[in-house]
Length: 191
Image 1 (cartoon, helix red, strand yellow):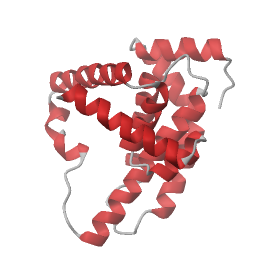
Image 2 (cartoon, one colour):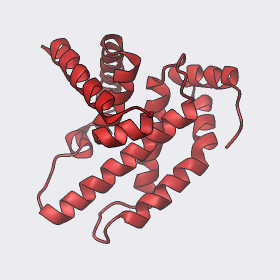
Image 3 (tube, helix red, strand yellow):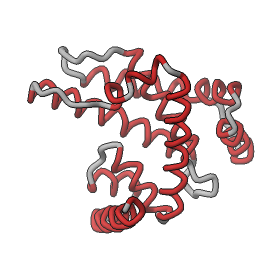
Image 4 (cartoon, helix red, strand yellow):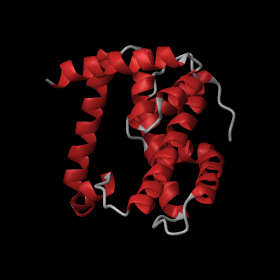
């Protein structure tokens, strides 16, 4: 992974947010070793019957890296690398949980992939969904404190309060309180 100083990394993230394809490619190139490591680790824990392959996991990690670039607070004291790693690791953990749950319960769950299958054939729907997600993320970020927003991202990726506390270096009680406040604020936002 290339070593970027904060100013260079900030510039790269800004370019990614502005839709610069070259910046996106550079970001992916920089984090390819981390993505590879997370994918190999995840593959080793997947059940044999899991219907997901290494390429799909790489895509999921790359998508999460892009989402991390879009949602990262440029003024955060936490480095983007750590933030991105946590986001991608949480996504891999969620996939593992989903595939283990699928195997154990033998029930069919609706996933993001099945909910938006029709978007693949219609780029305009995909673009609208992306714009909607950005607007939603912006609104969520406005109402939550920086800690609550970090907790929100981890929580929605499937992390439990103890995992959130460990990853953010706070107490479990602090994580639980942040989840409670986050839920309250989001309920008010959406009602």
